[in-house]
Amino acid sequence: MNPTLTAHTLRAPPATVGALLREWRQRRRMSQLDLAGIADISTRHLSFVESGRSMPSRDMLMRLAEQLDVPLRERNTLFVAAGYAPMYRERALADPQLDAARRAVDLVLKGHEPYPALAIDRHWTMVAANAALAPLVASADASLLPPPSNVLRLSLHPRGLAGVIDNWHAWRAHVLARVRRQIDVSGDTTLAALLAELEAYPAPPHALAEAHTDFDAVVVPLRLRTAHGVLSFFSTTTVFGTPVDITLSELAIEAFFPADDATAATLRELADARR
Image 1 (cartoon, helix red, strand yellow):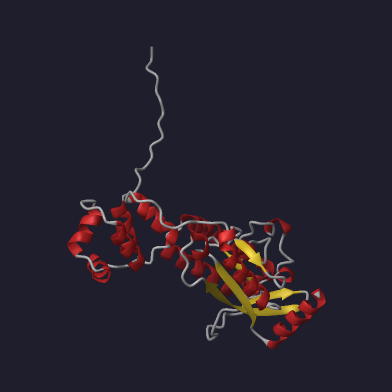
Image 2: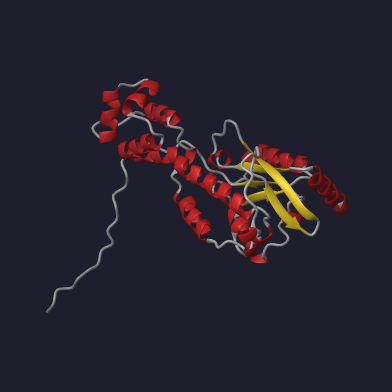
């Protein structure tokens, strides 16, 4: 009889805390000497930790993570890899313990009207938005709008807003550069997959005749062709200052401001019509 062959799935062993620290140090473009100096430990000790010859204490691991600006979610991964319990909790935004934070988000969104604003998570999934946003995304395919709606996909997808973004090339370059910076900072594989998807989207027909980008501009505007004319915006990003909850640490509010008087007037008229 032929022997029975059993297939086994080979899995890579979990990364050690030393390997993870080395990866974050290299991602931050720091030498062992640089990191040891600002973390107040010896270079020899850091070398031993990275090689696995020494295990960091919880306090040392926290100090290293802070100096490397490791996101809270990934700090938990470091603690677990070192044999410690995770330090940071992740609650849903609807959790009663985050009521004050949720009220703050709602207050900022509502207070920004008649201009559009939205709250997003680390993968650009829309968490909340104010009433001023709806008219601006009305031209997008309905399949892209129900939760969980991804703001970047909505922006650049051929059935999203790509067909009405007047300066598609400039806006696309701005969006992709921003996502690349996020990936460089966080190492997030989900964002990397999203970036590849966004890069593969074709240019809308009108983009072939798009005017030359104005590189003298202070910011890259978002110019949308709407039934009310071309509306022009610039945006700002707001984050919580000292979060110790993963959800809050990954939450951001994107607020859009009118880039010209005509856009401001149109948004006020739309707000009046909603009342």
